[in-house]
Amino acid sequence: MQLTKDNYYSLEANREYMSVSQFKGFLPVYDGCEAAAMAKLAGEYVESEKEAFLEGKYIHAWNEGKLAEFKADNPDIYSSRGATAGQLKSNFKHCNAMIEVLESDPLVMKALAGEKEVIVTAELFGIKWKIMIDSLQELLFSDLKALKEIHGKWWNREAQCYENFIQHYGYDIQMSVYAEIEKRANRRAEWLLPHMVVVTKQDPPDHEIYWFDYDAIERGLAIVSNNIERVKAVKSGAVDPVRCERCEYCRGTKKLISIKHHAELALY
Image (cartoon, rainbow, N blue to C red; front, top):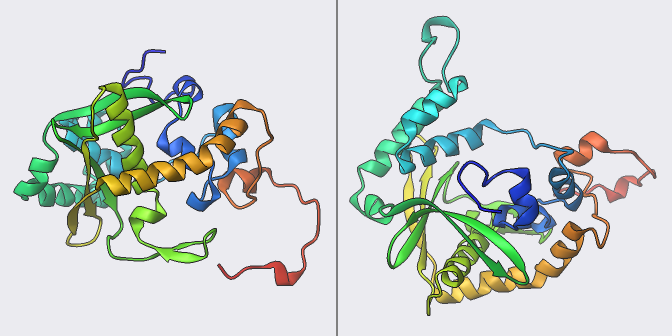
């Protein structure tokens, strides 16, 4: 299958290729659920798109230079009633403020320079992977993230500990896999240095640039290596997926098979 921007996120592409988001979707430690992941691949379940995802796409469309096209293709970002009819909804007006913060910072614009939305594929851990790099340069690549905040703490129910946003959302894994796939596809001797440009939805927006060294890349790839065989087995149908009974998919398809003791209820 030849991947393009039109079919990159298609069901067919997700069945043929592994991606970082799909991989994390199988792992409870990243709030993933095997049953939900398999239902998505079977075409039986489509996760509801939250407004926050659309806001992220708005920011990415700006980075790609296609914001006007994005606005035309997404009329729901405009108010349809009252005195503000025809204007951008308030959260997307705030996205413009976030973009202004990025545009006004020379170091950010330097990090986001280069070729945009670059699709790369390669084999890793015995299966085909697909990645899409936001901004690709000769010596580095950058990924753009729009977040609620940078300096908070996030509870990991599986690990029973607090994490920073990079650990919690598996962005360290993403940067590691992206570096390795790009290296393999272009037959490089060394990895390009991954960078993450972060802008927050706070008022006023905060922003930072984080880079990942070779040790971080190796650690991220080790996490994938330690979990990929289970993911491959479930995706191939060799073993049955486990339900988490907490996610949107499981809640919507749940059938009780037992009664729980009240002490089984966890606080976190």
